[in-house]
Length: 169
Image 1: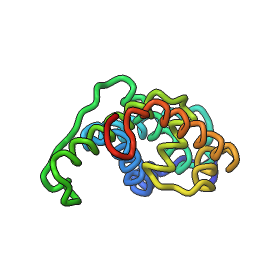
Image 2 (image 1 turned 60 degrees about the horizontal axis):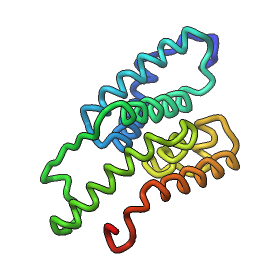
Image 3 (image 1 turned 60 degrees about the vertical axis):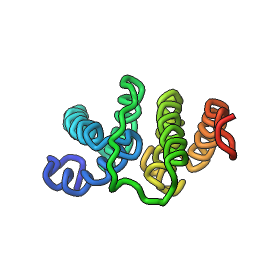
């Protein structure tokens, strides 16, 4: 699609909705919050399109989804949907509680990172995108992705140092 053409919103939503939702869900851990963020992302994308041409819908939507999900983590208290079907391992109650607490702490700590570090970390670990794809989505160099990811990991390790390999200190 050329920049001067009006975008086909149905096609854009159909093509990118799944990815936007997955990014938000992995960052937030809540289906309901992820649905809200996905809707907000597409509303914001429509507004941004009015401001000028969009070079990459995928890049714009991935970045918006990550930023809006992180914004929601920053301003809301953590919530969890616990369903019996969510259990994918035969871990005991203690291991599940520790893993749940670690996930909660990680989400909160990611919400405290600077925006670029949070986006890079989220796309790399929550969305499992390779470095080059993260760089293309964000319009930055692969080296900038590596640097932001390194800084994010260092900050997270210092914030989450209460956890060690053997459990809680």
